[in-house]
Image 1 (cartoon, one colour):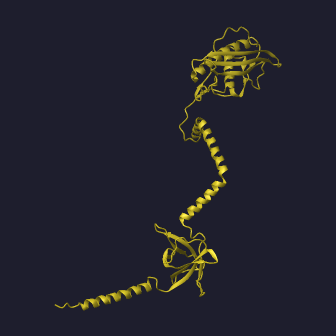
Image 2 (spheres, rainbow, N blue to C red):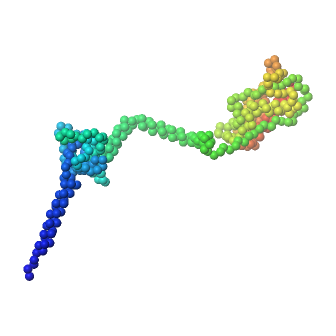
Image 3 (cartoon, one colour):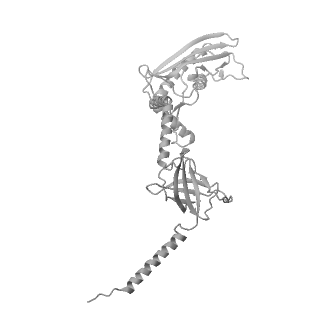
Length: 371
C-alpha cells in the first residue's frame, strides 16, 4: 500500500519557520540591538581586567549597548581603548562619567556610564572619545591588595615607633594593674561626685569630753586667761582620726570624723575644762574687746592612734603661760598615752578621749597655779 505524504502539514511547518525567522529579524532590528547605534570610544588609562567584547554597557544602570572592540595603544602600553555601540538617543556627553562595574558572584565587568550635566550633544562627525576614571579598572580585590601594600609600607616605615608604643602600653598596663585598687576608689569617687554611684555612708562623728573632777585648787585667779587656737603641723589640721602605722598599712577610719578640726576641738574642750574647774570668769577665747593678763599658748605634737606595738592613744603638746608684757612665766610638755581596746574607730576615739581627759586635768591644775 503506497503511503501519501502529508503535504499540507509540511507546508504549514515551512510557513511557520519562515514567519519565525522574520519575527526574530524584526525583534533584533527593533529591540535586540540591530537598530541605529552610536559609536563611542572609551579610553582607559589602567588595566581593564576581565572586560571582553560583547560586555554590556550601562547608562545610569540601564543597558544601552555593548562593547564591540578592545585594543591596546602601541604608543602607550598602559592605555586601553574600548569601542562601544550604544542605542541612538543615549545622552552621552563630553563630561559623561565612565567606570567599570563588576556584576554577579563572578564579578563580570561591564562599562558603566553616568550622566553629569545637560550640555549639548556632540555635533562633530568624528567618533566621540570618553576618558574613563583613573581607578575604573580597579576591582575590589585589587583595591584590597593595594590597601594592604600601603598598610605594610606604613608599618615598615614606623616599625620602631610602633615597637616603642607597644612597650609603653605594656608599662602603662602594668602600672594600672599595680594601682587597680586606687583606680577603683577614684572611679567610685567620680560616681559619687556626679551622683551616679551608691550613696555614701554618713560619717560617724566623735567628740571629746572635758573632765569635770579636779583636785582642789585654792588659789584665786589673779587675772584674765585667754586660750588662743593651738598651733600644729598641717597633718593635725583635720577632722580625721589619725593613725601612725607600724611599718604596714593600718586602718584608715574613712567613715570616722571628729566634731571639728583637731586644733579648734582642743581649744574648745580646754576652755570648757577650765570652766568645769570653777574658772568660768577667768578664762575665755581671745577677742578684740578683751584685755587678758595671761595667754595659754599650746602647740600640738601628737594626737593619734599608734600601732608601733599594741594599739596606743598618744597625746602630746607643749603649753606656755605668757604674761601681758610678753614674758613667758612657765612652760611644760604634756604627754599622755592610753592603751586602746582595739584598732577600730570607736576604740581609738575612746582612748584618745581618755588621754585628753588626763592631760586636761594636769593642764588646768598647772595653769591655775601660775595665774
